[in-house]
Image 1 (cartoon, one colour):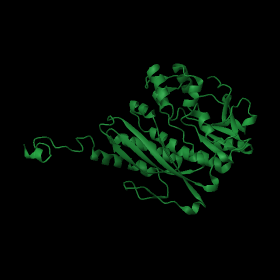
Image 2 (spheres, one colour):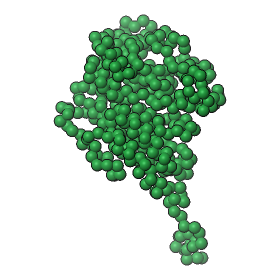
Image 3 (cartoon, one colour):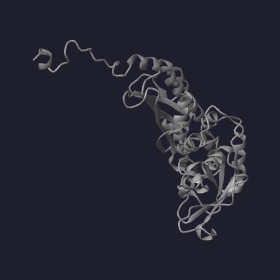
Image 4 (spheres, helix red, strand yellow):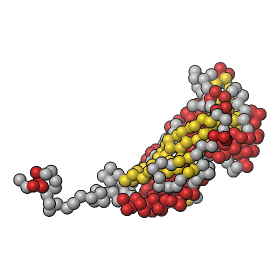
Length: 370
């Protein structure tokens, strides 16, 4: 028996194994860090300490700004919208979607987003692709007013194909204890205000892809007259980020709570912030969903109930405000170029016709031209 085998090592004539041969390139990772540096430095705040490359991101919380600060945290991803980005080889906007999914959950509680950290898992580090992803994340952080405090890029050869990736992030925000928003503040007579979505946002893409790409066999690069652009461009429209708009609204009007319309649709997400004993009655006739929703419904013969529990149907955020502040709230949102309208009102459940036990949201009527 040879000495190599006795020692437990590979035969001397075998090629020597390396990390690079196993599929991980440290050099490509270093190059990616340098390419993302300008984007990461663009998304900052005065409280950020240090620079990109440390073992931990540092953020100096200036406590003199708050009397009794409460930290809020949220973690999310983008889901199968990434499959569209990968198919189109366009990676510079899904980072905006990622930030939106995180920071707009924070603002529901009234929290100001402070910083975000991302996690990017890839089959193979392609520095330009990583830079595009971080470019989008940076842009989202700028829109939200938070810092990109750092993150991690992990190369997973053998687990993911070279062109595959997944992204997620965790965000942290702060709110004054007596300024927290939530179901406990909602009262009968409050008014529900809708804020328009920019498109599909980041939910329901498994169904959208199945209908439009698999069943209807529509090409992503094909121009769609109803959209005025290609199908791929429509599906990659970035999620609207409402964080700054919601904070501005809460500063100018008496807001009871917000609801971020994501997975589960309008009714399910609004129900999370309507307390027991009350019901929000919403009027479908107050808005028309964008053509992409109608196309999915028609091409896939998707039932209305299925559409409403899968997609945002054109509403990305909801505010519940006092009746006295409705006009002020609409004026604030209009001035900030956010499509907004009165969607419904809150009442005691016992007074809502047709409401069943524990029905916290009731949708009435039909969408115009849908």
